[in-house]
Length: 75
Image 1 (cartoon, helix red, strand yellow):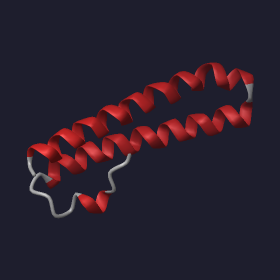
Image 2 (tube, rainbow, N blue to C red):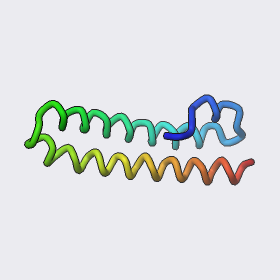
Image 3 (cartoon, rainbow, N blue to C red):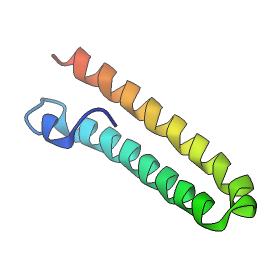
């Protein structure tokens, strides 16, 4: 996520924005775990985990876009 959590603390929509942020961070964490598994277990893991990496990256990207929209609307 390009947004840092401490940027959200003083904002009017803190509760909503922090939930969106949490969603994006969780997606990034899951994607990293899947990527690490690919590197650790090789070809078999790559087939299964590469889909997870892509899906979680897409979720994190959508969470960041939603957060950006929410923050612009309230500034």
